[in-house]
Length: 375
Image (cartoon, rainbow, N blue to C red; front, side):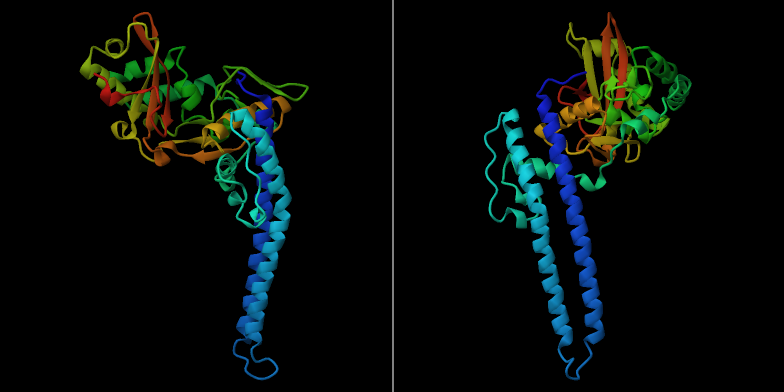
């Protein structure tokens, strides 16, 4: 699935992130040298601190002063080493801003190279963009295309075992209905978000849009690009156990049977006559979900509207090139979310409602309804 937007946005995003990551690595190496130098100077000063005989009296203070001078020199060297990276990123941000309908990026200041990396860029779009990309550099990971190709597909038998196991976690009066919903041909809850899917498979889905179930085609072409009929947004993940997946489904089924005569009547009451789809947010509190019940990956540097859009376009660029251009950050939406829980999506088929999917979320979606608000 191709995104609407400028293909150059993806290329610019990938180039900016690559340069920033190189700059972070330069910073890390210089900082390591500075720390080692200061430690050596402190070791020498500790040895000399008790010496009072000439000509060594006061030498410890001189050595300590030398350590400060070395640190200052390394800071100047860091500014010099960083300057071309900052200048190049600044230029690329200037090309990217108009593609988001924004005005020109202000010029770099004379002191920009000496500031910390984020504040080396002018306030506004440039600084916010860089800050978002840098925020997750240390925790982010990627996957090359060959490694993604070697991630095994989860078998139908393994997925069905999970469906049965999820049903077994529900009370007897909901068990059969739960398994029926999960086994429906339209439902991909377990196939995309079940506990049988490895972290590596979730990462391959996020970065290379590889369907972990193998239902949708994915291949590395002889020319190098990756072709996929699957789609995934800037987040991929699921539940870590059958019990965790069962909890929001049980909460929904209980509400549907307590307030109406089952799912179909419950959803009919809470949707407009021509509505075809409804998303329902089941809060973590209502479902009994806790930290550790979900895991996955979030696109690195997707914290703003602009960086999120460009991350998706950069991923498309990587698919076309057959090389990694984006990164993912491990995350637990239940542990870190502002309004965590699970989203259940249902689709109407005549008078019948079918479960399409159920997945953990860090907050309620903008068009979803809260289960507590349904009557």
